[in-house]
Length: 82
Image 1 (cartoon, helix red, strand yellow):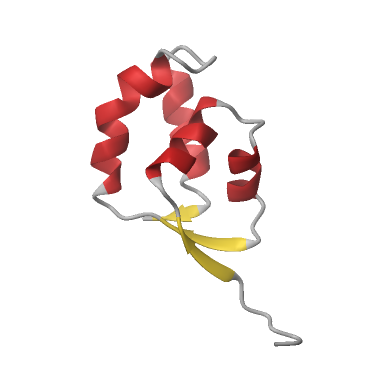
Image 2: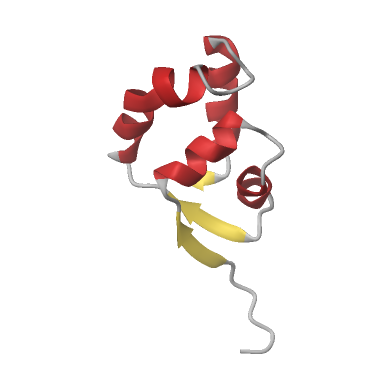
C-alpha cells in the first residue's frame, strides 16, 4: 500500500491510558501524543478509569494531586476519541 495517507486506527486499552497518566515520559504517553495513530477508547472505559483513579493513579503516580491528574486526563484525551 504505497502512498497510503490514512493513519492507523487503534483502540486503546485502559492499562495503556493509566500508564500514560502515571508518567508523562513513558513509551505509551509518547505514542498517544505522537499523532501517528487515530486512537479510540470506549466510553464505558471512563468508568474504569474513575474506579481506579485513587488506587492506581493518585497513589502510584508522581503527580500526587487531583488538579494535576485532571490536567493529565484532559491532555491525554485531546489525542484519544471516546
